[in-house]
Image (cartoon, rainbow, N blue to C red; front, side, top):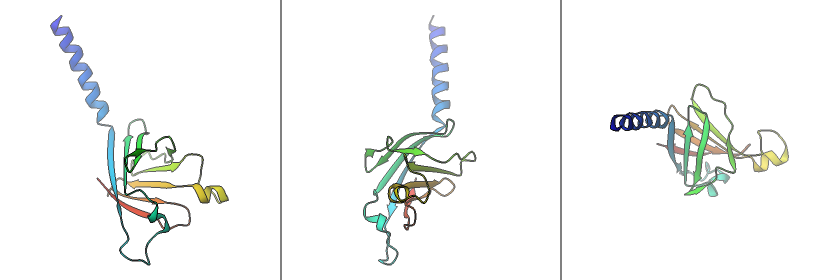
Length: 133
C-alpha cells in the first residue's frame, strides 16, 4: 500500500513539474524617457510595472497584471506565435484597424522573448518601452 501511494505521489509530482516548465512568468518595468522630445503621451498613463503569466504549451494567457491589479479579463492573447519569438496581448474587442473606436481604445503589449524587451502601444502613438525579466 505504501509503495502504491509513493508511486502515485511520484507520478503526480512528475506531471506537475512537467506542466510547470511550460508556465512562464515575466515582470516588466517601464523605461522612462530621458528626453522631453522623445516622451510618449502614453507614458503618463502607462503602468510602471506589468507582469504576465503565460503557458507556452497551451498558448494561453494565465494572468496579466498592471501595477499589482489583474486586468486579464480585459485583455487577450492576440498573437498566434508558433515559434515563441514574442507574446502579444491586446485589449479585448479592439483590433488593429483604422476605425475610430479601434484607434482610440486599442492597446497592445508585445514582449520580445529573445531579448526580454517589451513595448506598450496604441496605434499612431509612440510606444512606451519596458525591460523584462
